Image (cartoon, rainbow, N blue to C red; front, side):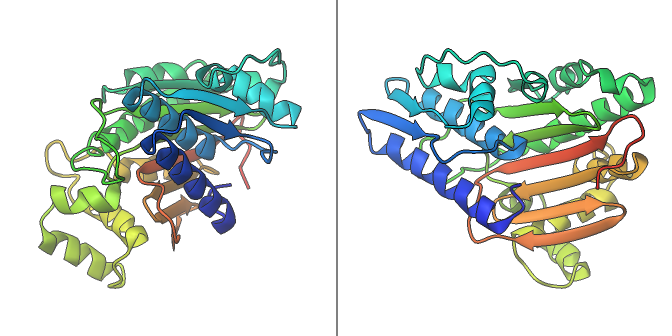
Length: 294
C-alpha cells in the first residue's frame, strides 16, 4: 500500500524517472514491469494518470514495456489498457474476478456525473442510500480536484492544457476500493492561494503548530469544516470525512504532495514522507454487505 514509506518512495521515484525520460527526449521510453508483483489501486492510478499526461504533452514520444513475470499483474495491465498505451501487444486474456472488476474514468468536468455513474455499476451498491452517499462522495472529491490546477505544478514540464482528474474503482468480495487523483499543485500548494494566511495560521495553530504537508491537508479539512455554513462552502474534504462517519468500517486516505491524512473510526492520523507524489490522491475503502474493513 502507498501509505508504507518504502512503497511511497518507490512510486515517487518511478514517476520522477518517467517524467525525466520524457523531458530528456529519449528515443524510446521503456517501462519495465519485471519487478512488479502486485498492483494497488492508488499507485496504479497515479502511474496511469502520469502516463496519460505525458503522452498528451509528448505526442511524438515512442513507448514500449517489459511485462511482469506475474500473470495477474499482466492481466491488470491488459485490462486497464496500459499495455496498449505503451504500444505492447499482449496475448494475455483477463479472466480473474479481481481483475475484471476494475473500472476507470477520467474527465475535466467537476459535476460528479461520471464518477457517480461509475460507482452505480457495482452490484454491492444496491441500496439506494449507499449509492446516494457515494455519489455525494464523488461530487465532493471532484470539487476538491477543481482547485488542483489553481497554480503551476512546477515539476519542470509544461503545464497541461486540460485540468483533468482520474478515477479507479475495484470491488472485492467484501469491499469497494475507490481512488481519485489529480496531477495539480496539491492541497498544500493550493491552500495559500485559496485562503488568506491568517486563516491558515489559525487552523495550523489549532492542530499543534507544525507546518508540513500533512498538517496542511489537516488545515484544509478544518477550514472546510468551519466554513460549511457559508454558501458554496459545504463540499470538499469535510464531506469526505462525514461520509466515512456515516458508513461504519470505511477508511479514508488523503495523500497530497508529501503528506498523508488517514481517517477511520473517528480517528485521524497524520504522516509525512520524504518524497512528493506531486498532486493529490484520495482513496477510500467501503465495506460491502455489512462487512467491516480491518
